[in-house]
Length: 113
Image (cartoon, rainbow, N blue to C red; front, side):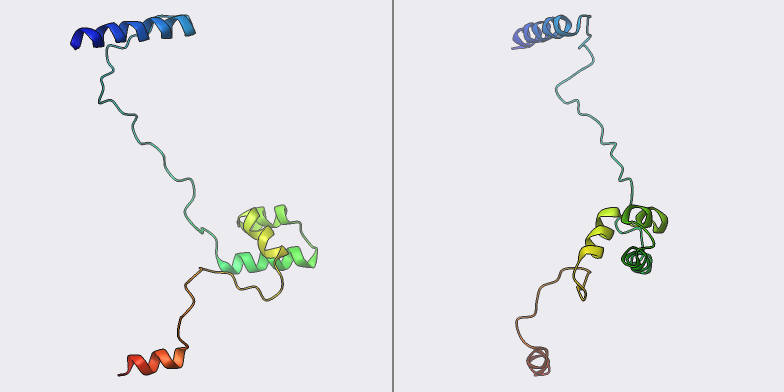
């Protein structure tokens, strides 16, 4: 079994060196090696306030600024600002949540029993 592994390792080394044109050392690679997890999120979720977004929407809708410029000045995401500017008047933004099954008064009556 160990011999087969050595033969495969040599074949892989030969194929790799033929494809990239130099000798590669695979001696320090074992089957348990993994790449380290180094990803770090660049920004935190919603690093802007609702007030900044509202002000940016107002500036864009009044025509004093374009969407991209307002997004840069107020520090809000371009796509979110664009979506809010183009949304119909009266659209409610925020977290999506499950709609209640029962009306509030019936739910309160059941809860008080």
